Length: 266
Image (cartoon, rainbow, N blue to C red; front, top):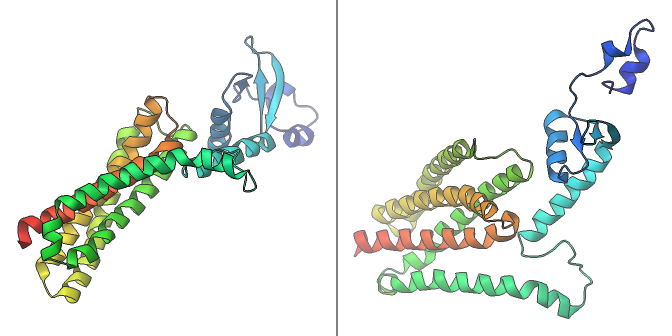
């Protein structure tokens, strides 16, 4: 295979084909997964690549147009799966079919909501004595959920493109924990300051700041580990990570904030 048609057509007429051809081009078999091909095209900036059989004989080629279609399908799958839907879900689909496709994940989400509500119920006496906690605790959970979604999106994309494996997963985890900790510090100062001026107690500001750091660290940890574990167990990370991640950030956020308040404000 020559490097490209342009190089072949513009080469000196006295040159041999052997001087222009690539000795070891990036190539694929007919059984190479489409996601792996898409990842290789992105990684090596390919425009076209040969397809060979078991003996290395050329049987076809893949162009960037084919890969764009694969990437578009993967993007559709990821977007729909994060909401618990399939790519076949149509905005004009019959009501009965739409209910069937969505009911399962609605039920799972309800169970996780009950779990978060149970954690809040454990600290019911604390909330009754300090009403400000009820106002501030959604902030902790929301920030953790947002941070976790950012992390999991990056990790799921890395898995789909073959960029994350067992070799570099630990490095990704350390990087995301560092980002989570530093973001936690920054926003802990902001939210803690707002809480201090709003309620006139510095201890409440310190507690919500500490809870935010804890929850952002938990979000980073879950955002990396959940997709990797789900993939190891043969489950599509894009389909199930969101529900599990929301549960983690809600439970950790409420528990850390209300738990610290119970220890230091009562």
